[in-house]
Picture 1 (tube, rainbow, N blue to C red):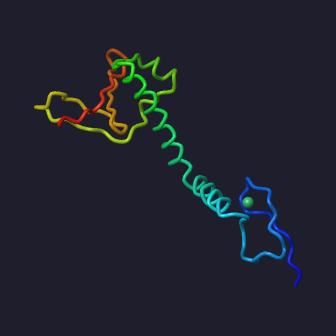
Picture 2 (picture 1 turned 180 degrees about the horizontal axis):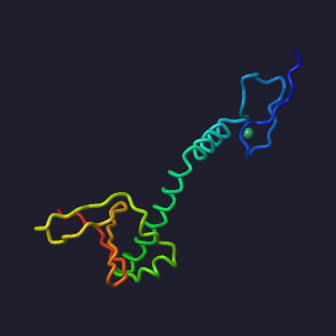
Picture 3 (picture 1 turned 180 degrees about the vertical axis):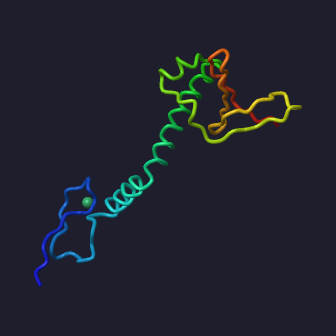
Length: 130
Ligand SMILES: [Zn+2]
């Protein structure tokens, strides 16, 4: 049987797998294999990847505000620079007897809430006390 040359399965790679190589070989290199599996997984879990991406963007924006000691941002301004207030990791609820009786949206160590009356987003950064 004559084996033909095949292309590496990684869609981003144009390498050819030579006819004399192992017939079970599907990728030219291990990194091509890893990359291809990553691409398949990303396609399968696109929504999750997109969410992750938005979470990272939100965190970066929020962290930058806090870095510049800006804790209250006009919601329209935040939106204009790419902050999507509906993308967060989870919500922290506070009990009525706690100082902050509000539910805060969390991304890592940053918390925020949307103040509908003022149309602002208020950011908080959690600092651990020793
Ligand atoms: Zn390849």
